[in-house]
Image (cartoon, rainbow, N blue to C red; front, side, top):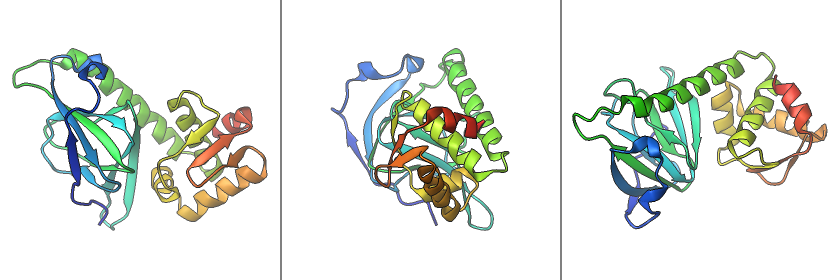
Length: 215
């Protein structure tokens, strides 16, 4: 069982509300809640009704398959939003990857925020489509290369990446085994494409090569 009982602490004074995204204007802003690594933020089947913003840390969105395997559909980093649903129920689990702060935005009953939420829905659709394209690739190196490029772009195009997720998380996101993910990282290191600074820190040495591998 991957979902764990929620372990959170409300940090009412953490971060001023002015930092909140303008897309949530009109929504009721909740205090920042702190979740320990592995803590459940919400579960599949629970009632939806809030949109969440990662203040610090990282979140994984996943579903448990009938055979008990886990399929991760998305990662959300600091500053990104998640939890938007087309109906009143959550269709996936949301879980903190590391120590994570999350702020919830709740829409008052009768408030029409469709125009404000449309960009969020379209952004999520675009990411989902891109993820499907990555999963459609046959080569494990192509999938991992595309993943590293995506993480780099989402961290401002930095040469040095901090990956909060484990190799197992990456495998469940890319449809690969943890052994395959580890072998690909080693191969990219041996080819001089990346440098493994630590288990969760990677330096991209040949960005053009990585881009070509992921296309």
